[in-house]
Image (cartoon, rainbow, N blue to C red; front, side, top):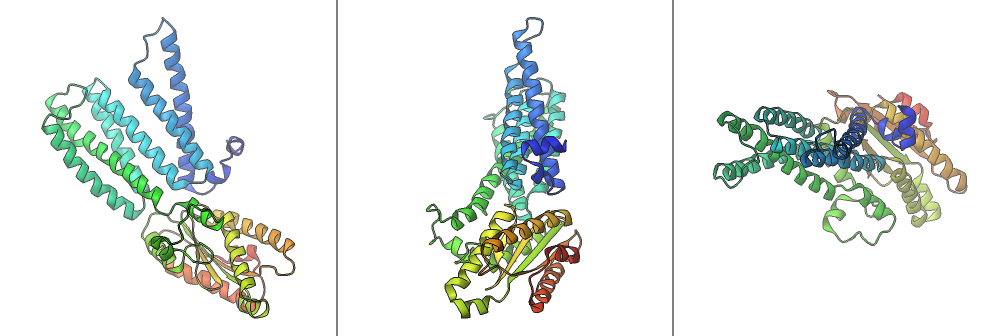
Length: 378
């Protein structure tokens, strides 16, 4: 299994935590399911010994395969949030199609109940703000669909008994409402906090409009990282979320003021930019990387336990060593502080703990030993 994940290039994503492992397993299951059943349908179509495959079965199984492949590329791009939304929304639609076209009313109810399971799972995976919007949209769309259904303008492709129609109304339309609302939420999520946006800023992409008010209000003008205001907003959101364990990394550039006094503000700004670029290349897309102060940085890592913390801090150490080996005249001397909050623990307490570790290292006047910092984290 591990060898397969390495060959597919998704071992790093798999190691990020429970949700990441569930997504990888679902993704590979979808792909295997789609390939297997489409092969069976092809054999049934070509062989006279079997009845021909129904087009709705081919449609549903093809969709599952497409969703699996698309999710795989999301995982390869390290986009956990996009992968979770895509794979759940795709399964909703596949099961809804099965419930809509199947000829057995009892099967309709069973399929509809299956949709509810996926609906509940997906809504729980959403952020708290998205979850409320999804439920509100679901209620609005549910009312609209039932009005159309009652007026006879929208009817299923099957014939149901009176009790079956009641079950269809209770289960199917509510599920379709969730599907539509989650598709809207996915679009909103793609427009909000798009991870590639940060890379475009740091790479000087012409696609980014620096005069955009929303961008200016949430990003640091020098580095393009999120600013302290955005960090605190996300901190409050994550504190109430289900994305525990949440890890925190804070960092401070040592003697930045002395560097500015000795070499000038341009060199000091280059130090800040160098560290921000290093952070951009190390942290995951879903992490909140911010410039917290003039010489301080703070990072929130949702769904990241101490194991992930070890991996991230190891990468930071390697990147710092590589940078300093080629910039011996003006190396980056950084002090770090880390802490990991489990469910039920105060995230604010862990933030204070991380800053305490970092500032103690800063006062010692020496570069932090990264492995020691991790071992001292809560």
